[in-house]
Length: 262
Image (cartoon, rainbow, N blue to C red; front, top):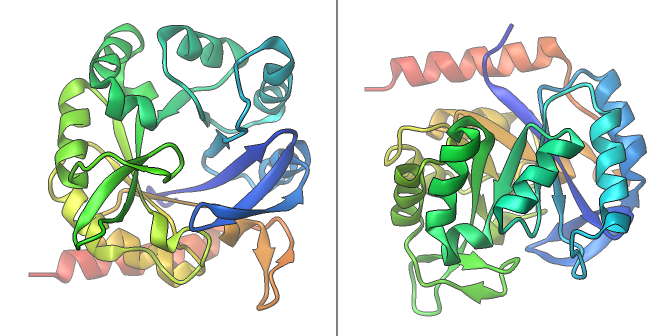
């Protein structure tokens, strides 16, 4: 068995499954419950559900689909999207999710991460960091689905979140989101070398080679959306996931490369 995790990420808007490019132009790709069932059959390691519905207010009607997805899943699930309070996290765990993925709230209210880690354990608190380019060069953390720059260095933010108790960091390049042209390997390397908690690479996966390169750059796990819902050069919608033999092959090579590095 391989120890590296490969995590499909499902992005929800209203009741549908969507994919974006650079956080823009969402395209409908199917029914989320059906996607969960297919990933069950393919025995995926873990699943992220990111609800980016603009009107998501955590009311009972909105939570019904999220609950059904958690009940349908055989694998561990992480829930993200507008999570900004202890009550939200409690509801997520009540629905059956194993982790919460926190983004904007980790920027505006970093002490919340400490409170959540103290209450629920750091292993269940994941901080997702969206990174974009600054107008005059350099990189910055962005909030609100990439709409607002926080003017914070991503490495510094990752370190602060680790210190606050986050058990895992997802690092995502906005510029690579949905393009399936590879990860921002320099960003992954910089963040991975600056923190001791597991780092999950996100944004840009399009092939097994991309997953391998992310691991070589220092990621402990990888997550992808478009790679697991599109197939072929014309991006036909087809839920897919590599089999164990393929993952063993690619990650065995990655580990050998990392071990041989000076």
